[in-house]
Amino acid sequence: MDALSLLRMLGALLLVLGGMVCALWLVKRYDLTIPRKWLEGLAHKTPHKRLEVVERLAIDQRRSIILLRRDDTEFSILVGPDGVTVLDGGAPAPARPAQAAEPRPAPRKTAPAFAERLAMLPEVTYAQEARKADLH
Image 1 (spheres, one colour):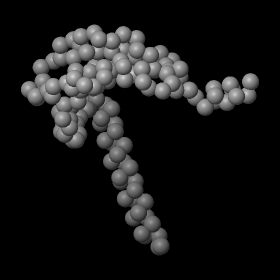
Image 2 (cartoon, rainbow, N blue to C red; image 1 turned 90 degrees about the vertical axis):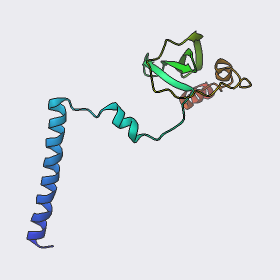
Image 3 (spheres, rainbow, N blue to C red; image 1 turned 45 degrees about the vertical axis):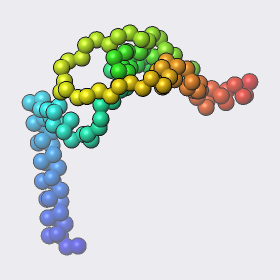
């Protein structure tokens, strides 16, 4: 590799990196964002989902409270190292903002309730805690 091709390669690299730095500065300076509808257009088109995570609040590094919505019902659950605990459930969800009219599938009558399915989940323990119990 001669000096001229090395110089051209480094120049092209500096040009690309300089363009990226300028673009980042513009985004940060003018607080530019991509419109949400553009991002939704990039996402895969999926049918209406019955279950969604409305909000998640971290209590500490190992525990968090999650607000779930299933159909028109909200559930609060506590997720931590000792497993999943249902805090409250069955509260009707607040009215959602008007969205495009999509036919919502009828809920299945034979499926167990969400809280019953959570009760069937296995208890989760960390391997370190299990080792400590084995050592004692």
